[in-house]
Length: 135
Image (cartoon, rainbow, N blue to C red):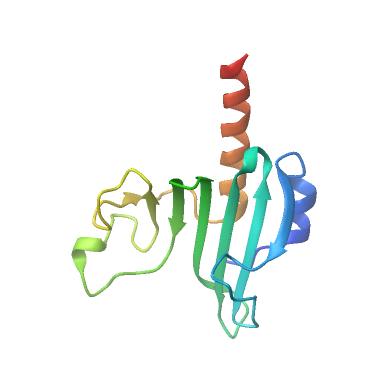
């Protein structure tokens, strides 16, 4: 997978993106091997983005964490867990964590949301559905 093009995202998702800044909440800035960004969304939500970049320039692992509120999140991750099968999903290494989980063993499979573009499209649809529901 190619690294995220944040300039494209700012243009393509300008209706839901308020700002994009360096840093993913870990206190560390982006480096040549790791992209760290925070995408501020409407409705006081944000996405914490961490992408590990290989020497050939592709994304090796990602963490795209959609933070809806202080205690509510949906995290899209791609790190593999080859040593402990209990942590694996049928879509290994792709999986989803959510704030309703009781432990790291309760991960969801992730068949479709494996890049930030797809995740932002899903979030846009969520916002649209919420607006329709609230009318």
